[in-house]
Length: 282
Image 1 (cartoon, rainbow, N blue to C red):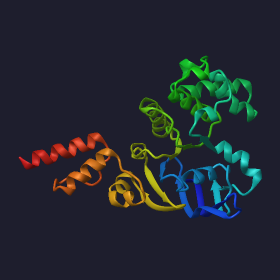
Image 2 (tube, one colour):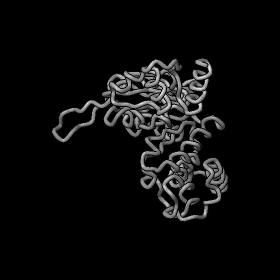
Image 3 (cartoon, rainbow, N blue to C red):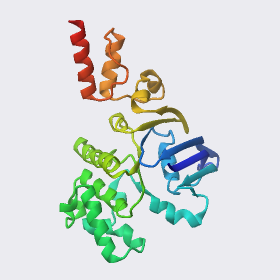
Image 4 (cartoon, rainbow, N blue to C red):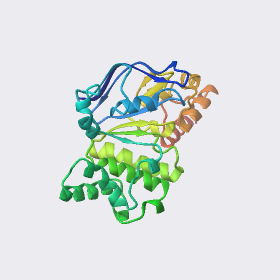
């Protein structure tokens, strides 16, 4: 069942010279309920602009966007759309509004008019889902970057969305913080059935998804399972993108005559493939 759908969406910003700057061009896609979709593209490819269309932060110049069959063009639908699709921004400091963790997580449902007794339940549930329940009384400014981002995610989860859209949520984090956030996102998708749209420039994060989209100059130029998309190393390099390091290692070894599969994504898969090739050559 589809949760998000765009049809022939184009979008233009107005630049200071008052000339239209086209960012999205005729983009059509569907996101299924429970799916984990990763969107890749170099800076300026349109991926963040596309993400902002999913909860009516931006509206198409032409074309249409539907969230559970509600059109974003209809302002009367915006509250329901934003309840359905929660947005997590790149910098958690731009999304955290309170000084104490539990107060911050409660902010969203309070603004939705949720009853205080229900808010308390939602705050506990959201903090538990991101493994931050023990930090509920902590000062937000004393948290690490990864912890702040997990609190930002909890604040969105407390509003009970069906879909989580994350716009480069790990871009400002160190490797430990990135791992914390991505473990949380993957668990929400796999164990709780949360629909996830992840905008990222980290190939290893995209490799965790069910499906990958590659954007270039406002258009979708590649689409498929991670193993399928990342096996096209030369095509991705042509649009200024890398592939996961294990994929690149196996690609370079294949160029040198080593018989390895093209769909390796993880270190574990690379080790298994190399071991199998070694044993086969004995």
